[in-house]
Length: 469
Image 1 (cartoon, helix red, strand yellow):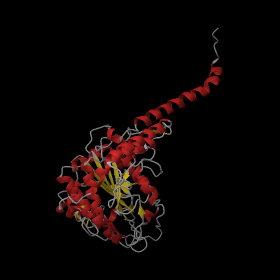
Image 2: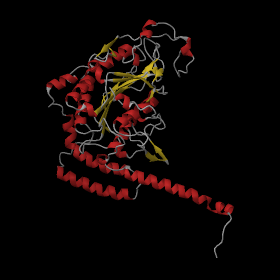
Image 3: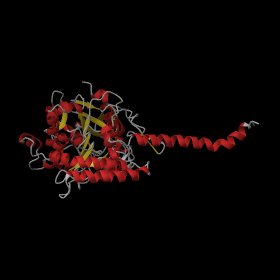
Image 4: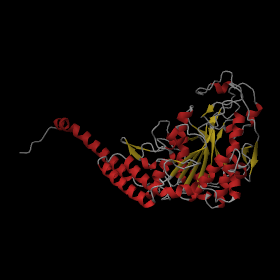
């Protein structure tokens, strides 16, 4: 005989069951999401909107280049050089910056107008200035991380928390790679990565989306060269057997993406044994190209080589290239530090833009220049400048962008953003948008939440304005 339970008793008996249903649904979704996204990056391809760019070259000036010495001229700061910081600025929360007896310090290098647009660029970049009409300078970047570590993590992964995927990993997760023989995401440095591999980490994304560190001298990737006693056929047999064992092991651990990545990386490494050495062998490049990048000798040699390799990577279908230059941390003698650093990168970056353009690659390649923050308008120690995340500059070129323009502004002394604020999340949202990806839809289910590069930010998508003349 059917018995009807009172509503209260029914809820008491079944309450725990509702939670189990919800948990089961979340776990099922996470399993499906994880399974669907562990594929070989070369097969992945999403498109949320019309893309103007297919590749990204991310030029990161590690240490924090001063916006005041580079792309944000401040005539008022020149007028007030040596004066005490006005009281009106001392009321702001400026983190660890001492404002009690702070003196303003003018930029020690002139700015000039360049190109048909009249874009103002400092004399630290005479070669780059020739490309003024290709650059869209964003003078209103900001965030709230005063220390190098959190600021670097934020600029590279959209959050100051460790363990999150880098922007390059998100881009490859969404778009995959056009090359079967090279990694989708490659990172290089002329010194070091201050945050180590976290700079190009895949975080909680499947490990197959991790960036690959490429050395610019010697063996491009350690342990890639085939043993002399092993021919190609023998190595193919060895890898096939390893894959059998790995897949057998992986079958009992369906929630772990690392073995999928290991299997894919063995296959990629096998193909790269020919492709990678050819990639870094620039001996066949015309002498005029080598001279243009400044790779033969002097301060430009190392970063110039990195920029030339970046162009070669884009030609061969690499999706995201991350170049790091060290070290713009001008706590003392800021101008001397910046003069030395600019000498290393100015000519190579200008050559990269020119080379991409003459090969018809600039329209499809987004070039981004930034650091983790700017520098203070007040003096620190001996003509130095402290960290300054409250207003700094970045620029973009290529990828469908109409250059020769400025977006946003800081105040007359360069302290705070006063027009068109662009948070790091906004910068990342714009980069993804130019690649045809909607930052709100590019998500990955992790620990019961749909995570994204821009977290809960990314409100100021500049893509449309950047692409309009």
